[in-house]
Image (cartoon, rainbow, N blue to C red):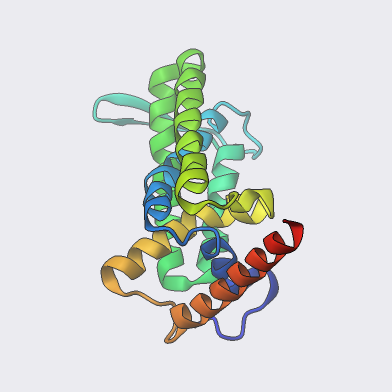
Length: 203
């Protein structure tokens, strides 16, 4: 239960901020489809960064293919994301951490097969396709600029976790604690009202 948390680990405020920019169901669906591929492809290109720990790379075979796990920036990003998600909410955060770990291993597998000469091209295409869809979701359906324009770090860090949390709530009715979504919804509505008022003052 996260009732007593505040500041950087305040799940309620984080989710309310993100939710205020994702109220349209089409835009939400677009984010569910394309946010995690952005994270995966980022880890894919980070696989080629040098090791930052005094540990040897882990090499093994997977489906008769050679895989190299490097303890580098990609690993560190996946680890920090995982720890942050678990700190936000133990149950959903643990699932998100597992997905982060799978993304790191999976991206390492793909990177080992593609090598840098091809991997960066794949990453570029994935990033362009995903970000284009996200901006279409906001511009055409949500009709509000993405959250990253107001809080770049928060949008990048919390995005993967909150699309997962959205799916868990929609499919299974999951809440980190009783009343979580009703409290978040109230904050989302307050955020939207404030945004609409600010737009009217500028017009």
